Amino acid sequence: MSTSANDAVAYKGNKHNLNEVALDIAQLVYNDWIYRRPTEWPNFQTSDKMA
Image 1 (cartoon, one colour):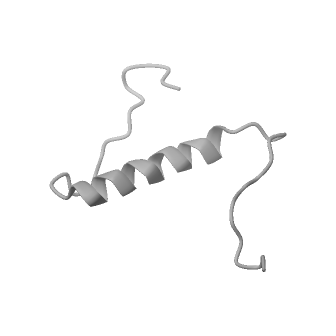
Image 2: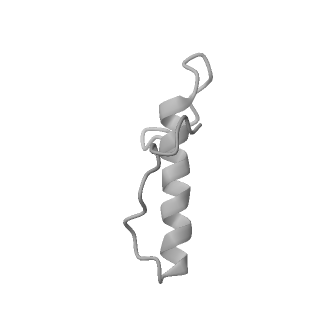
């Protein structure tokens, strides 16, 4: 959640490749979710150790 006009993250990706823009935005949203999610909520991250 934004707290001021100055807390934005500048996009540094290739703005002319729409496929990359969509993936970059998804990664930014995911990173924000991991950072802000409540600790009591379950972790649904995938693991290579799971069969």
